[in-house]
Length: 434
Ligand code: NDP
Image (cartoon, rainbow, N blue to C red):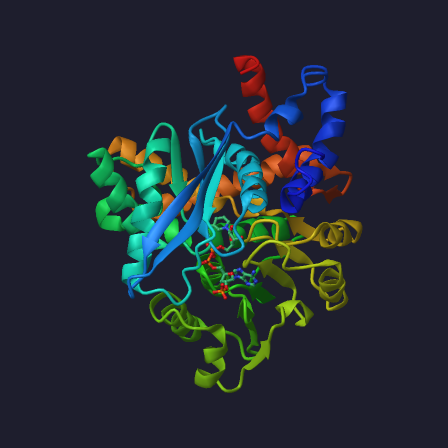
């Protein structure tokens, strides 16, 4: 705690894992006394670098770039890049730490990492984004590779940015390899990768609901965010017969009591992905809906909540509101969107609650499938990838039950932490103190 005192998000993520994993270590002779968690919380490597770039007016800017290579005991480092002004060491270390457990849960051979920059893509032209991405990769290229570290997208890094990053990597290294995931289909990408995190979050919710004899069909669903994860979570809810009533961005949320149907979702996708507009513009197109500036959607009545925007976006008060309004299931699409207070409120009331490291693992799992396709130089069909994704989410759900069952109740937080821990810890023990 002393060493990382200035890193609150990282401490929060470690605390949550330690609370469930330390008792497990104490009960199991092979892990006890090996300081295994202490070794896991220290990144194998944390790289920080200067990213200079020139805007359209010719002015020079400098941002800070990072790559946290957290743990490679079970495979090359794998995890997204985030471009957002709030990016700092604490945020990236929390994300990289979570990623180690998440990647382990997928059962694919991937270690954990995370990176990004405090660069703000909002309001920048395509040319400015390109120049920034090229400068970022000019340094990052020396630290990554298809067998070393394979970054992907995250907040502020979508297919456009992955394209610019890949272009510069290919130029510098003079090789075409699967060094990034989330690539375009014609240059090494995988079908279903854009959809995978959102779809997986809903598949996980469906798996949890099944244990209670329930399903998404007919349920009212509240979603936050309106980026990659939120859009495809909404799409899958609609496909399964649920009703989506909210979406949000950092300026506020929209509530559409009639439901956001396929046509309305198509409008949102164009608005966010092509026009790069604000969610408030939804109510101009659909005046029956309401926009609440600066708010989050957790006060809206629902059966299922899918927080898909960012960390700590749902607090203890929000959790109480959701419970009062009859919510029975929360599946995290974002990383650590629920504060510790909120998580404890859900666990105390024994509702179905899935932590992101389990429920949003579909994205990185499908990135793992993209890496396999790149290595084999094949492309699987949409149905093939979707079936594998469904199977992986089902297996993660089963692992959570195996390690998280407490009588009639499944503590998915405990289940995910221990299941993720065991595989990495076993590999670290086998490889000695390195
Ligand atoms: P996007 O950049 O596509 O979308 C992010 C969304 O969250 C936007 O609607 C954005 O609004 C909103 N948001 C971002 N920061 C804040 C904030 N501080 N307050 C309120 N809203 C905010 O990112 P993704 O959809 O890819 O990522 C969303 C979450 O899912 C993140 O936690 C990410 O780590 C996690 N995740 C993503 C995966 C992926 O495959 N993409 C995989 C696993 C997890 P605005 O436009 O106003 O900024």
